[in-house]
Image (tube, rainbow over all chains, first blue to last red; front, side):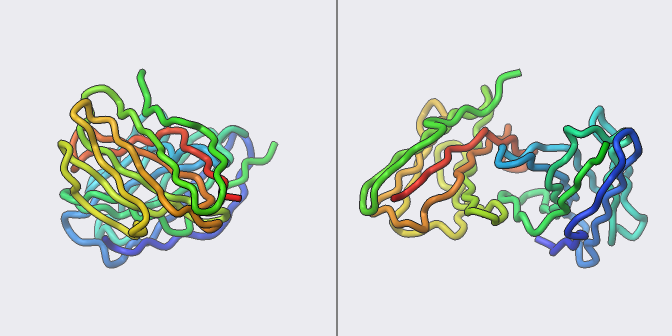
Length: 110
Length: 112
């Protein structure tokens, strides 16, 4: 699976949108971009995933660049409960495991 | 909605003892994955099963073994426990090996 690169940490104001970047310059055509988050020692929580097109669900939006080398997860209205480590993961369609690496520690401040 | 169930949630063992962790996947999910997360580390993939057969293997020690049963639940057996095995162990399940994985709450293992 392609390596992903994320900033180690970022702060966000409560009620504002949080934009989390992820670089995956070596991603291959059959690899999806998955986002999970982990709230202190809880099980990782699935957020969203996409291949080429932008995606939106009740939790977040995923914007993938046309060349697929980077993506941005958008939390539209961050709340204190969104404080977590966010992981961007490239995963083959026929792949099995998730490879967690680093992630971005997001702190939502009042 | 039903989620992945793991038991026990907390476990304390002595060095050289054995431990068995259980995972009950979301109903109608046939694929199960195990991950280990040491203190301050990211989750690391251990092993996975699809339709009761091992489908992928990661950095799982030889002292550990796992299986998936006919009702799709899975057990992770850990023998000759070492202090370094103290970690959170997560189980995840998916409807098939190609689909989104959903994680359980984890089992916190402490080896003394």
